[in-house]
Length: 381
Image 1 (cartoon, rainbow, N blue to C red):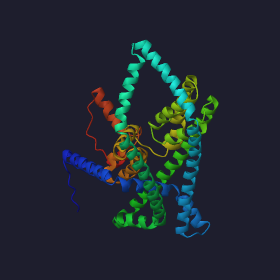
Image 2: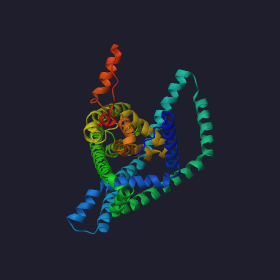
Image 3: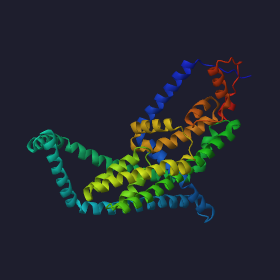
Image 4: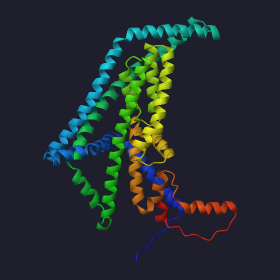
């Protein structure tokens, strides 16, 4: 007969905090390896149906099918980059017009400050020159950081592509490895967890692609109707940045407003703000819940907290990866007896748990209730 050891709550809490601290330290230390590895795993899951189709229908070897899947990803990303790059090239050609527009608006702003606060233009220019002189000192460091960022991005892309190929090639081997780490009694549970993770992640990523496409289409149409220059580039940028929850749409609005201000009028900037709000409302209330939110049932508060923590640990990559990682953790927690409360915490508000509501309502009314034995499995269900 197996003996179960029940630890005090404070020891359990201490163990949880120690594990969280250790995992955070590992995530910070292994950023250069873990981020491309996780991204490549997600991409491998997304393109797994393509690889299976090539292997099953066209009878291709797994290695060739994996290469084709990776090439397809490269072609899609390259196509988007070419469209965005051509628009940015046209944008750079209009730089003299941007400069003239900014100089005009800046002169008007100087006149307003001088008339409102009594600060002469010469004093304003002296302050700006002092700030510029201080900025020049840090210019070399900024340039070095920019070059390092570009180099890191290139290395990240190369390793992501390589990892994705090996993930598709050795997917069966990796699956068997994960199963062999557990006893035969738990093999059905491990298989169920792996299948659910694959299903949820695939549906989430497909929903994310659909959401990005719909937001890009709506934003492009909106900017085109308003008459914004480079509306195709700005529409695509809005859809891409919208992948970043909560902060992406704000960044897209700021960038679009700056471009519109430089190439148009203040009235168009106001219309752009209204258009972005309308697109965001449609996305948040209809597209996101129906297409993406239905695949991943995560507590909104913890999702936001995960995004903030992900940005602190891994930057922008952490913001994007936080939701899939939390969804995977929830699936694992729901299948491990001792972690089911944490899975319940990560999920949305459960309206189908009548036991607690009845008990609490009786306490609120001052009615004495008999002791109730709660079955954790029934609560988790």
